[in-house]
Image (cartoon, rainbow, N blue to C red; front, side, top):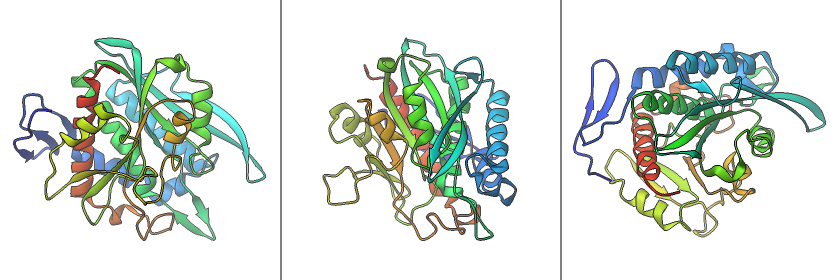
Length: 299
C-alpha cells in the first residue's frame, strides 16, 4: 500500500487522499443516504413491510443514478422463507461491476438493508445497523465508476439479516455466478460510530495476505482497523454474527467490518443523530483503500 500523505475535505463534499491513486466519494451523499434510510418514513425497514420496499426502491434508484448494472436481468432477487412462526417475502438487491483483469473471479461486498421495524409503537430506525453499511456500498459504487476493479465485484444489499441471515443464505444457494468463482466476501454491518475510533475486522487472522494488507493501513489518531472477534482473542466471536456467516458456511473467505455494540444497538435510539460522521467518513475511505489493496492480490 502506498503511504497516505494527506487528507483533504473539499468544499463539494468529496474526500480524497493525496497518493499515487486517489480514492473519492461524495461524503455529503454518504451521510444523506444514512439520514434518509434511517428516517421515520422508512418505518424501520422490517422485511416484507412498506418501509422495506421503500428502502429497496431507494437503493435501486441510487444504483441507476450511478449507472451500476444489475447482476442478472434485474436488481431484485426475491425469496421467501419462514421464521419465528411466520411466512416472509424478502428481496435482495444485486449489482455488478465487471473486473478489468480477472472478470471471472468475484468479490462480493455486502450490507443488509433491513432492520427491526416498529415495536410497541416505537420505530427502530437502524442508522448504524445497517443504513451505514448500505450507504457505504453506494460509496463503493460511486468509486468504481472512476476506478474499475481488477476482479469483478458484486454489490449485495441483503434483506432479512435480522431474521437469521435469510437473504445472504438464499443468495449463496442461488448465486447467479458460479459459487466457486466468489473469492471473498467483504461484509459491512455497523460501521458509523465508535468512541475509540476503531473499526474491527473479523476473518483475517488465518490469511497472511489479508493480514498484511490490513497492517499496511497506517493507524492514525482519527481511525484504525483492529483485527479480532474471531474466536481467538477472548472476545465475542463474530464469525456468524452477520451475512458473512452464510459465505463462511460455503467455504468462502470473508472480511467482516463492524464496530463493537453500543448503547443504541437494536434500540429505537439508533438514529442518524447518533452516528459519528467524521469517524464514518474515515471508515468508508479506509475500507475502499483496503479493498484496492486486496483487489491487487491474486485471489
